[in-house]
Length: 265
Image 1: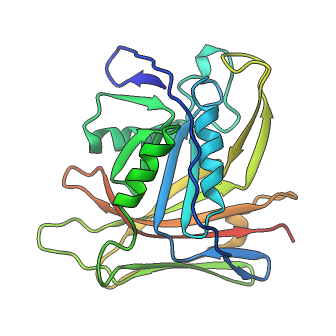
Image 2 (image 1 turned 180 degrees about the vertical axis):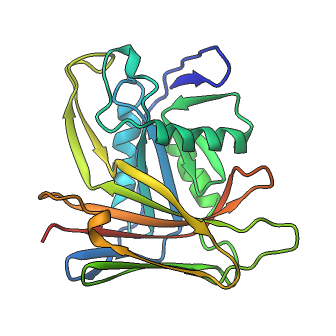
């Protein structure tokens, strides 16, 4: 595990890698799209091609990505680029999301590989046994009348909606995020700590954005499919995540999520 200080200091430790298993059920298929609606776990891995501790976590995340009720995302960060290899998916914007989680968890530093589970827990991303324990501890939906998030394609448009939100007095409205990701990629690393390795990343995040704050009347958004599927012969996907907001503005528990993968025409 490699840490990047929020304050100017650095620590390192090497995590072990184990493999966890979950029962596999088929996802719902709609024409050239694959949709996951009944998501119970959102796994957000903060990783880097320039960190030698990350490949075991990348491989572990891949075992979760095809599970029917799991949304698995790889947020590649760019703060290790100075070591010698520029991460091909690295983004300062991804680092901003990781720093927002650091505020939420009162962490004094950020590190890779870090896995955030349902917005509630963070853990070294290669610690499979501990990850399994935390996944058993938290599962969506978290209430008897949970909010709903949907993504539906209609021709060249995507329709995204969130509904069923209940806001208690003093609570902030939850935020709706849209995350765009590629299916998977192999990258041969020529420099840095992983020099000579061919790394595989699953669901690398291409971008994410705040779509709006959701009140009790819900929200409906229409956007072109082309905004989440760049030209090419690859499969791309998008995920809508409804997430609570803590009093200090940092991200809280994930309330609902859905995922759509779109194959090239």
